Amino acid sequence: MKLSPIPRREVSDRTRAGRIAKWTFLGFNAVMLAATIYLLVSFGEAAASGDNRMDAFVKVVGIVLVWLVGGLFTGMQAMATCRTRMAEGDEVPPSAFWKRWL
Image 1 (cartoon, rainbow, N blue to C red):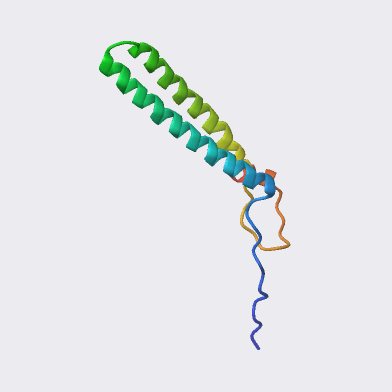
Image 2 (tube, rainbow, N blue to C red; image 1 turned 90 degrees about the vertical axis):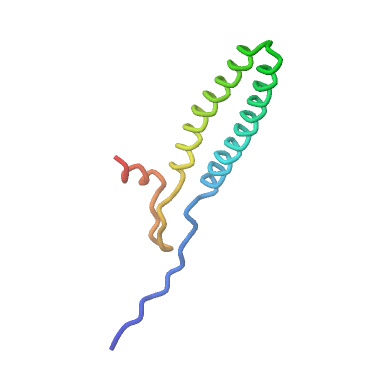
């Protein structure tokens, strides 16, 4: 006689803090993309007029550096709060995530 497997419901792969971290990461990247596009447009206008090109370039480099550093931190936070996919009852704490990568 064959036994059928017990159906198990999968739980969400993110806690509430994980969902907040993920949306913070996505929102940060959207804002930084908009700021970079705005500054690149202003850089193009400054290059066309011939004045303040260096000032516009420094702003673009500053925004890109803030984007890289902020994206690194918010991305690490979003990764750290993601649980592994599991069935209900097989609870694994978010800190176990790092054991896979070390």
